[in-house]
Length: 59
Image (cartoon, rainbow, N blue to C red; front, side):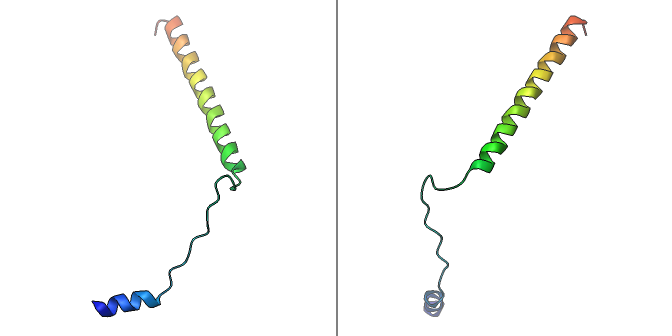
């Protein structure tokens, strides 16, 4: 088991880049979220219109 630990110490683990808050470009994520919200609002409006139509025709 001690030999295994010695082998692990010789292997270098890759280091991750340092994260700096606020430095990431999120324009694509913002566009995707905006599109999701638009589609959701439109879907809710269509569902309400269908429900109102069904109520008016006594379905």
